[in-house]
Length: 350
Image (cartoon, rainbow, N blue to C red):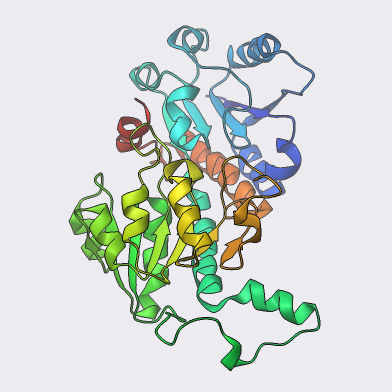
């Protein structure tokens, strides 16, 4: 049997941001590589036609970039026109069900690799850094020193009881997906008392990670001195961090958000931040970028960053390299490292 033919689809910007020599070396070690460039000059119909032509005699498909790169929905009919296709790799994350007919693909014996989790350690590290920065006012004091000012410890605006370090704090994790599983490991040296709310994850997994499962989100918020939010947006989670949750947070608690602003009810969050009752570190907004006059840009108790938790060259190249490595595993008869998990389809494929 000859080397498998693997189609690599590039979106308008994906070559520079996602491609790496390491990915090329992996693909070239086992496959015949076929590049398909879907430039911004093509119409959606032209992109679909170009992809279908390449898939007609392809054994594998990898998408160089975040999302589906404009290839269109791979329906059962389109998959049938690619009779040799046996592997699809992507970083579509919770949009996997929008990429292809998952049931039809699995029935055909097509292996589906979902490498978005490769990015999770980058986001978890950033989330931890945001929490520490908010606890210690690092960006604000950096700005003061850069403007030729200085801050004495007596000048700190916090009350004596305000948490100013992570060690030993009560921590709430809203969501216990890939990001917060990594964050839980990073919290271990700080001896935090952490709990997590996630109805889709059994409590045993949280206990094994060193914490415990919270049965109720508002009650967990009321116990949290530091509150990390990494819940992906689904129909069930839009504004799940609602007014009750936000007003349950103790005064001077630190609120950290790295997933999507859609899961947060913004008005009560802004109310408490404007009143100086909370501190926050925010990496995601709605809309993005936020308006020039948004309080999230200007409030002195908010650390604001530009949706950078997982958006680095290393992270983006890592997720694509993961696709290529899983393609090699599949065609070598080895188990995938990042198979599309059924629970993701159940949660996000509705």
